[in-house]
Amino acid sequence: MRDNRKLNAKLRYVNVKAPARLHLGFLDMHGGLGRKFGSIGLAVKGVETSITATYSDDIDISGVFLKRAETYAEQILTHFGIDGGTKLSINSSIPEHAGLGSGTQLSLAIASAISNLYQLNENSPTHLASILHRGARSGIGIGTFMQGGFVIDGGRGAKTDVPPVITRLPFPEHWRIILIFDNELEGINGTQERAIFNTLPKMEKEISGELCRLAMMQVLPAVVEKDCDNFGKGITEIQNSIGDYFSIAQGGSYTSPFLKPILDKLTNEGATGTGQSSWGPTGFAIFANETIAFQALKKIRNKWKLESRIKFVLCEANNNKAEIFVSDKESVEKNNKKKVENI
Image (cartoon, rainbow, N blue to C red; front, side, top):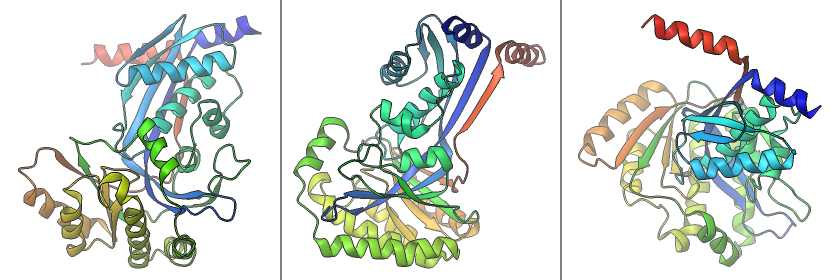
């Protein structure tokens, strides 16, 4: 069986594309009902992790985040007892520690690639995430990998492995999002992040209740009814509360000092909702259509054109799950050869 698995892997070529996600806020940092966190998330187009995987006797990785990628590959190969390795090419990547879910998407992309390469019949992202110890607090990155769109997870309880996605909705396709990047900063991560979550005071029960009310009675109906104004208002209120709660840890409501003036300007230019994704430093602004968003984008690019560290990206929601393509390796190599010959 194992020999056949290795033989089949040598003949296969796997490509995985995983979209970035926005973390739009937590719902319950009180935890009095036995569950904590509860995250709101949205998959976006234009920023993604893309990898290709083929067979190798060892682990051979090219691209970025080499050590992290090698660790994920080793964990999956060891867990399933695979007698072989993989050659991974990281073709594009979500910026690391920017609040866009780079670690979860890279881990799931690698795990899914190896699973398909060796035909492991293990294609549950939730199980793969558990093997790789992803989803400690939030399940939205796993949810967007599985389904795309707008998702809310149910937080972590005493017996929770990975926070379950309890709501998934298609996001209005005509709405637009402007992402704001600060390329000189990183969001809180790793050991520092774990220490902060262990020491933060319990959120007041009334605030957690209001956040859940905003999500249930304003944000979710607005997505269904394609009401961008009320969606933006609800998200902004959630963001303001969460920003206040985490301000003691990140030195204010936003990680980047540029974010508040930029978001204020975008609000004046028609954004219905604004905030920071996770620990940032990436910020976001939501618009009802591309025309308004594009005009706002031109104005902020002009206003902050001398700040080389600041980058803006206009994008839309991604309502599709991660893409996994499995091909015959020989066919792919022949096709690539033809492309080279035609250049």
